[in-house]
Image (cartoon, rainbow, N blue to C red; front, side, top):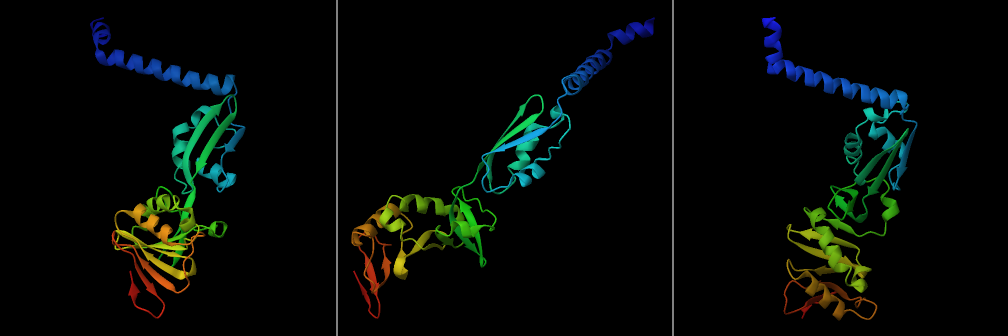
Amino acid sequence: MNFIRSLFKSNLFWFLCVFLCFFGVHRYTNFFKSRVLNCLIRKVEFDGNDKVPEALLYKVSGIKYHSDIFSVSVQDVKSKLENIAWIKSVEVQRKLPDTFYIRVTEREPIAILQSKYKLYLLDNQGKVLEHDGIGDFGNLPIVIGDGSEKNAQHLLFVLNQFPKIRKQLVCATFIGKRRWNIKINRGIIVKLPEKHLKHAISVLEEISDDNGFFKEEIVEIDLRMLDRVVIKKKNEGQSS
């Protein structure tokens, strides 16, 4: 009797009782959901994917048909799919009794990154995507140079405010991890300043013609100084 009284007074005893009750309820609930309600996975629906095939999404998700729908962690599926380079974000929902609904948001390439003689797609957050399928994005500008992937978004954001210049952009080279040189149609190199980028490009648009073009004899335009424009022509020195 003393042993039983001591046992009832023991914190450990009551802890074990609570744990076993919780464990039992949890197991029974899952059993009830999956067996009584028959909540087995029979359908996986994907939405929002354009670049990433459904077969890859299904494989990476780890979901198995005819498994208990409550045994699959929504957060685990989300984390696995967001490891795919093309995927920006994922929403995962259970639709009882038998369906997983997965909506993905894919990344949007803004430029082509040239690195070590290879080409990669680049999104507006500086995320480097795999290089497969670049041919579908041949209209995007090429960015080159160490650190260009982290700074391309700002350059393109500014250029988009000057459509006459933006449509001429061929490539952009990040110089010394601090400023850009851009190449526009007819092979003209434009040297941009480290700061006051918007001002420099507005000047560039002002000195272009109505269509944004420049005279063919120009080979370089230097806009690194705020108070002057230095132009280099073919077979000539510089003028300002």
